[in-house]
Length: 310
Image (cartoon, rainbow, N blue to C red; front, side, top):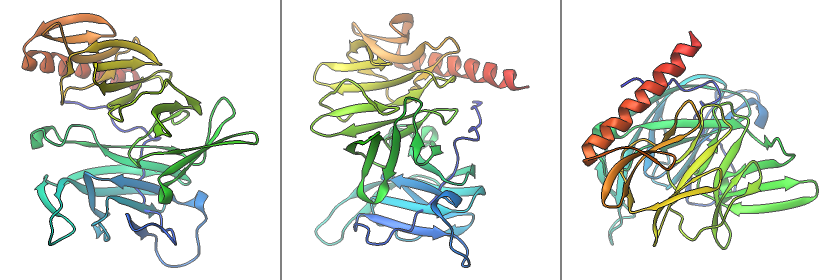
C-alpha cells in the first residue's frame, strides 16, 4: 500500500548525551570525536518502550535495557533500525522480552537543532505485518505562532511552556510529542492533576484517561485530532470538538484527515462497525470490510497528495 513519504520536517533520530540523567534513560552519542557541537548544531531523537533501537547507520546502539533512549546525531541522512518488544518483569532479572518484532528500518534526514520522536503507529498486539513506525519532529525549542516557547526536557520527562514571564511545566512521555507536517505547530499529551492536549502552548479540555490515542495532524497542519478512551467509551476530538462517544474504535485501522480536513476513522456505533467521516457514517459492515474501506480511502488520499507534488 502506498504511503506518503516522510516530509523534510519529519526526520532525525538522535540520542542526546546528558550528564546527571536519571537511570530510566539510555544515552547514545552518534557524533564523531572532535570539536564540540552546540545544541543547535545537532538533532535529538527520543525513543520509548515498546520500541528499542538496534543500530544507527550500521553502528549498534547500547544502553537499551531502559524504557527511554535518547540519541544525538549530526545533520544529514540516517538509517535507524529498531524493533517492537513486550517486556515481562521477573524475580530473577529486570526484564526479558516475550515478544520481539522483525527489524523495522526508518531512513530520514536529520536537521540541526530539531527534536524527533520514533513511535509505533499500530497496536503492539497486532500481527507483525501491520506494525510500522514513524518519525515525527520539528524545531527545538519550539516558537509557537501565538507567542509561546515550548522546550522539551527529555532527561526529566517534562516540557516547559513559556510566555513572557509565565512558565508552565508538564509531565509527558517521550513519544507523546506531535509536530505538524510543516513543523510549524506542536501538540503533546501532558498531565498535571489531569491529562490534556497542549497545542501551540494552549491547554485543551482536561480528561481523566491517558489513553488519548491516536493523535494526528491534518495534511495542511491546521487541524489536530485525538481519541480518548474512558468509562463512557471512545470519544473522537477534532480541534477540541467532541464526536461520539462510540462503543469502540477498530484497533489497527488508520485514523487520518481527508483532503477536505474531515477525519476518517473506524468506530463501533449502535452495535455496527462503521467507517466515519467526522460524525457521518460512510459505510457499515464487518470489521474487515470497514478496515479495508478505511485503508482504500487512505490510499486515495495519499495518491492525491503525491500527484499534487508532481
